[in-house]
Length: 180
Length: 387
Figure (spheres, rainbow over the protein chains, first blue to last red):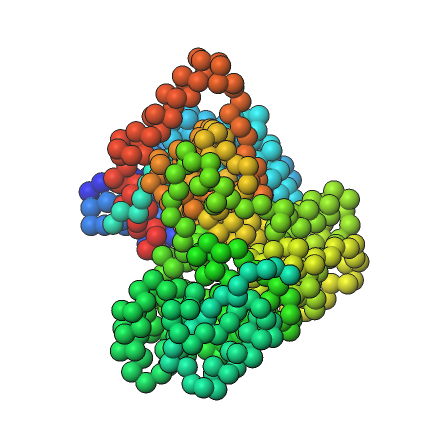
């Protein structure tokens, strides 16, 4: 059995759990605990360990989807989670007060992993707050030299999440062709 | 008035009444442009009614006599010969005329758009016919031909051949849309754009939310506007008030997404005039693919063109794609995002060599499958495509 891993990360409430649920072939396994700190004000039940989902490619190959906990105090687990990973999907909540701060924080936290693989970025909740816009995110990243795919995403919509996943694969290899 | 012989149109399996109606159309909006002829030898284009008795047999006979005559097939049903251009009945005269114009272009005749000016404006609004071949909308091949056209690859070392597949966005609806969006975002004042063909269905552009477009025009009608020369549309642009926009039954889209599809439909596999297909350039950033019209292989092209400077000719070669799909993508991306030319002069040998090395690596990876996990990634992609 060949197993591969894709990591979903981002701040609390960005939609990591929902996004994994949208595309997982199995009901996602959630490791929830009640938030004990200021996170509680934002979201009562937050994922403090990790989410897990699965996509079955065929009888012998699987993609494991891991969602990182959104709380910084668990950041020691992020490194463990990324070990052997194929790539990173970063979800950012556009309604948060400091979106660019979140952007740089996570890109920095996963810098080594991103250098070895790739990252794509989904901006969620743009229907509730449309600024900053996608162009603004691209502008913000100019100084970093990174040019990841950045899409508006509704984490509840399977098509949106799949589009992000496809962008990740093509980022890894533009020469990919659908090969059943 | 353009001085050229009218295009000869021959009909097959038409009732006398249907032929008379066609005659009426050609003597009205199609006056001096199209002429019904009695004999196949005089025809430039054929129109075949596939709802006649023994249609398949009649078609086989017709095709054996005229294997290459461009032909439009009319029918109530979808089961028509796939090699012909299909128009579903009931027929809208504007769709027939537009289709004839498209076939005329394919036979290297200069398009004449004056026929459209004489049409009643409402004819063009309702997509009562399908101008796609008679396969389902989910058929990627037909969708590709719809968006990219059918032009074969050309010799990219031949200036003449490149010129033949070029178009000037400034002569098309695309330019006006692009300018209106730019002006509206610059001075924060909404505008309305109207055309002779769709006077009752203008396009409103507002500065809100990074630019929004409101219109009652269907995609079908918009595509027709992209085909017709802008000068024949007598486009007018003026400032307006937000209160001028009636939001009932109006479709709203982001200005960028709207311009993206307008540029795609205007290009139809062609290059914006003056594009250097051999010049390395890098796409400024990925398009927002979840919110725009996604064409086949667009993501692959975006992934390659954002990763490093690369020319359009190399993109087509590296990814093994028809030129028209790369050119269409370029047209849309150039109109909405922009490209950066390679930032070092060719005389800087060290960087040139470095770029060549990068490009060779990319070519190797793309063509020989040496990317780590390529097999798995392909299977994973296949799995996602089926989701």
